[in-house]
Image 1 (cartoon, protein in one colour):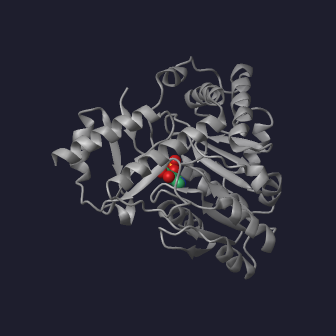
Image 2: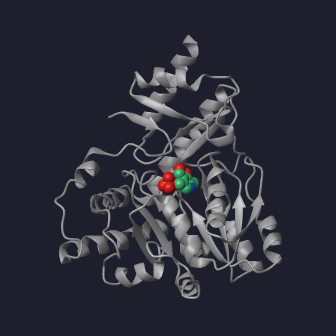
Image 3: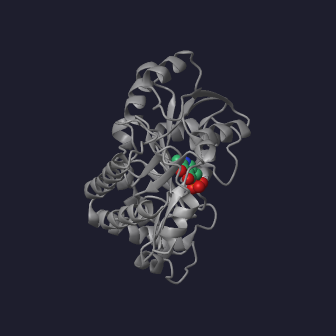
Length: 356
Ligand SMILES: Cc1ncc(COP(=O)(O)O)c(C=O)c1O
């Protein structure tokens, strides 16, 4: 199997790909509804929540939009220190909301104190924050941010994007007080792209009932009515629901804590390799992602040339993203990637560095 050390879409295990090939069923049949319910109920374990998990036929951005349309009438605070947080802010603006940006340098974690100061102005119905910035390899202190929000603006809903970390890092939705936590299938869950998962608290559902223009496709109140009947308003992405149902069993068989420990051990190993080659990490120590490492390209490596070399060995890494595209490169260690794969990659990178 080839190994892509890229932050999604990631490699999918053969048996998971096979699970998609089960025969289709009418989506309003008892047989499919049982699978749909089982998958969404099992998924709650990943989110550490007793609330509901919606499964939508979309990628993660669809749920970024759903969060805005369902929970914000007017004002939202967008915490921005990376490309995907910036996208969420843009989603809010594009939907006609007054989205105030609380910006940090991209290599700086969002500060809970500054979040609290911004919220003291009052009037923010929700706050958006990205847990794991896939562009920068920075993990924001979401738990501390939740505490800060609770202290100064307890009615403000906390909306968290964990597209590139849920299933690879521990995020305890209920214990931390998150109101919506969303992710996509093609990253740490190691599924093909096309399915998004979003867990939503009861108080957020209540808030949605006072929000107008929630739209149709992503109206969570409509989805909830159907969910309670083990169904969805529109046709679900059936092959991915089969695959999710199967993959969740594999994930729980590994054990969530073991899975998180595997991801953080791989992150540490990649950081150690970078240190040994006088390359520094983009994110500061203490805030580095467990699932993707962004490295400053201080040696001026030609990443396309490196990837051509790696592809001959059935591997590849990712270049930088957005404004740091040319100055960084990324090694993702999520999903099915094991430490032995990382060792193979780093050995190949050493071989490349020696020859160039
Ligand atoms: C942190 C983060 N948020 C949102 C997105 C957008 O997700 P999707 O491509 O599933 O719409 C990405 C995609 O890479 C991401 O990394």
